[in-house]
Image 1 (cartoon, rainbow, N blue to C red):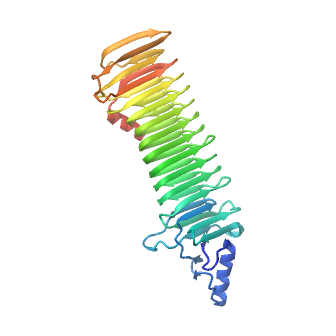
Image 2 (image 1 turned 60 degrees about the vertical axis):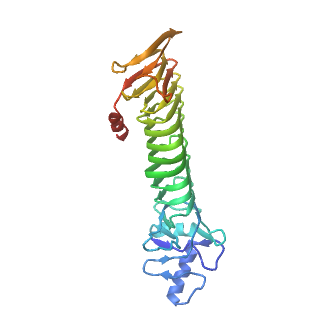
Image 3 (image 1 turned 30 degrees about the vertical axis):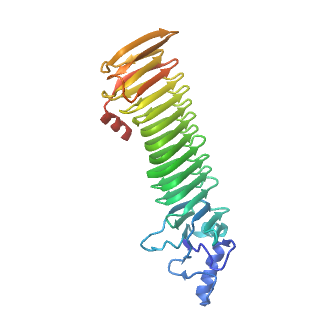
Length: 371
């Protein structure tokens, strides 16, 4: 394991990590000072540099976390750690490049090649903006950073986010899974391709955009003014979503166990199963799939249901009901607990499937969303 310098004092060019380590060893052995290098700690092979990067560009597969604020209260260092052993470590060190620009306060770390079995950790000031790009199957992990911008792009590698606070958080993966634990604060954009899955615990911010191609998409909680959730054929599972939300799933099924706000869900051939909470409105439409609407018994809203068949559970009491059938389609209109003063409404439609309306307590919906 090596801890490596992230900047030479008087060097504005790109440094090989291996060269820096060799220079440090030589300086220690002959006791000759090297003015262009920061002090080298023989005990743990560490070389620390006083840097305050506003932006960090990483073209390798790192695990990134903030500096320990107790050890480095001035947040004026960045520490790169390369884990490995033997020839694999030596080869990987030879390919790692580090460059720091004093004027722009930008730190660039790149690697042409890092062998399997070798991992890289970066500890940087907690407010450093992150721009991470990986090739091949390299994984990325970002923990507890509080930055303005956090952007991650992977090919086949997975991405793990842990409790990120930012203004702009963007993740794109062409073949890897995206997982987020804790709360991700900010305007969030997560996009995957192929069979890559998205599994997120909590999103909180102004604007959310989450999409998969064929992989499953799961988010436990979304608190946002506006959200766009979409998939081509992956299953969409949302625990609770708040705000103005648009959910599109072309061929996959969609399940939403809680909503508060305006909800618009559409699908071509997937089934739709949604819990519409108090003070909420919903517009649900599937061309070929069934639509199930779950509501609290206290909901006050206008109701319009249309499908090849319409089923209403006995505990649902509607007033001013109008029903008519046209070209194998049944349409039912009415009010649940009277008309809503706020104009709340539920519109559920399927061209060839059935529409079901039933009650469910908020507590039961909460239990489902936590499973």
